[in-house]
Image (cartoon, rainbow, N blue to C red; front, side, top):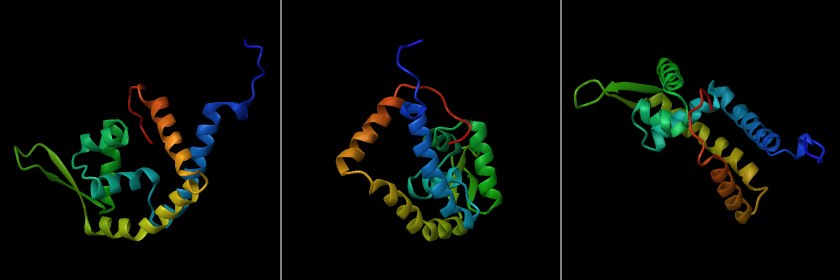
Length: 150
């Protein structure tokens, strides 16, 4: 063991986790009236605004496993937020799109979601924001694997 005393509040993992949980809790408060989770919001924006069109692309975009993506898409489909259609080539591929309800929810919630982001980014200068994003990319950059949730 090191000569340095263990200090939980000085640990990178603790600080990253705490900051992420604070941001998550505030965002979930915004999403709760619409019955959405943070992961569902991420999936809706990916399909609706970022051009992610297949379940496998969605899994890669979100960094989650294919089984987790399947459960996520099925739930969004049941809620009439996402439609899953067959692809034009051979009928095996699945193409994702937002339903009208999904588009309406994204548009309705966007101002509050944007305000949540602004709440936290306002605490940092533009230089600090850039440095933080670079540092997070370095930390996660060469780590392999997908998660069951985000």
